[in-house]
Image (cartoon, rainbow, N blue to C red; front, side, top):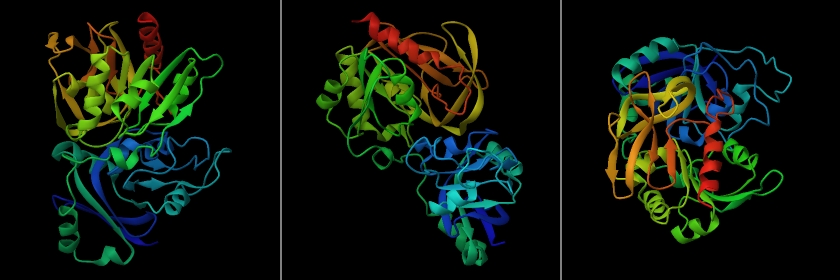
Length: 371
């Protein structure tokens, strides 16, 4: 096996074996708690710029298929697992995970103690990391560490233009068309327009840099702001689009990055979490119903809004509608005077859980209420 090393910006080093392509990879080290759904995770554009550490020790047993991708490519900057599957054991697979990573030139590492690494990231926070395999793994650690520390930090990073579609496209409604929605692609997952289409929505997916007038015209019944990677403080154009939609009281639904964009459009700040929320088992309370949902997450930033009271903004009263039960992080916003709401997590999680799919029905009801 080819040797590989993982080097964190604080000098921690983990030695293992090459997994996927050989070479080097750089990004922000984050951990994901999902035991399944790794294909959906690493093809999620919101992981752009991140090196994903899987906390589950055994990864890859279901291989890779041609149906479950959330986008057209793998977006993770690098991939870290402990015990990769030695053989694929699922009838839907067309190749192994290792083969998929290699084919798309994604550098990974295996054979390291990912739980020890996760504990370190929980204690010290998400940080820059490099994976080096092949001849690079034998370079002095001081040299590798200098390369890691030269990588830009996630705070201040902008990836929307990198992951967004370059031209608009339409996902037709399934059956009768009932609504037409414009979706701003800041890193949209394929399951999102699929779930809307199943509810009779024709989805016009628009590039991140589309003109405000063009975007609003594409969604006469409602607008959707997608998930995506990067620091929301850098997404000035998306924020202006949301402000324009709020100003004409167009029904609006945002998820993940879209929640942060809505928050900033409403006048709230955003901040970077210590190690973020990622994985498929995060408990969130819907404060409008009192129901606790098991949810899927990938966010390193959060909205800075008070959870103990309603807030007055230029667009009226706003309430924190969802909150994480682990740490009281804002997980959703609801505008009380205009038709807009958002959640920080992923109700479209293809690999599950599906506790929050009802939010797409809530979006339909919102559009119906203002017709």
